[in-house]
Length: 308
Image (cartoon, rainbow, N blue to C red; front, side, top):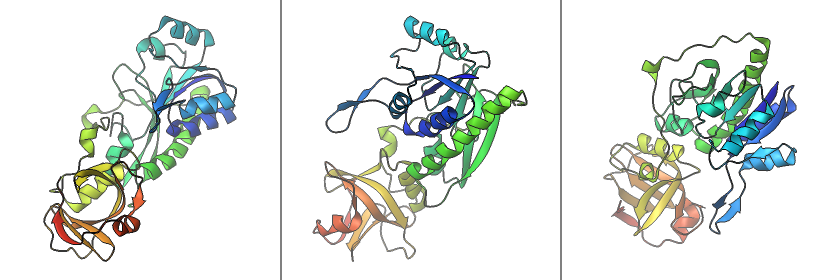
């Protein structure tokens, strides 16, 4: 079959690579335009664009998905199916083009965690298992008929970075299997039960602030969900402090929520239930660092309260 691949971030790369190595022909790629990144705000191409260029695959990067020139070019490619992995919401004028429709790979076991951040919210909610779903696109987001699914175990050590890497690889195989069965005509789509749907909205800055009145387990799950980006935040010594890894304390010290204890190269914060030991953090305007080097450059010891 002739495929057009829609995707932007690193999560989409394994799927693009597997499809390019498979029996189908990837005739084009659609991705986001370049955007400024990093402290120098240098314009950088999305990972999918860089990979497609190295493979010699034509790329479209429309600012608007309803741009007439973009739509005309896409139609001229005459694809049998569109495959979508971590891309924007497609209008019907786009996903209705190919004869076999548009197949989306989603990072959850739909209808659970519909939305832009399914991996992060599965971690935040303390799930022990998640998965991936291929489904047909419809007008409403993440509501199309389920084609295939696979489960992925969540380790207690996983954060959004490590879990995303494993899921990207598993998802690439699931997408390849889905296309194989579509071509063979053996797939039987099934309708989602919307009564079982749960939301996974886009992560915003407001989600990043830690409420130390929550339990240690809840806060640790928040930290896992927001690592490696954008990072869970608190305010320490008058500046924003981002936390990327923390551990539960077995023997809980007598600390109030938000109360800090620094001693013996340990940075411990009390919560609404239990306490956490910070392991990897980042002060405002500085690089990410392990707790040991951080404390060696920070003089105060004893107990005090975090400001936020």
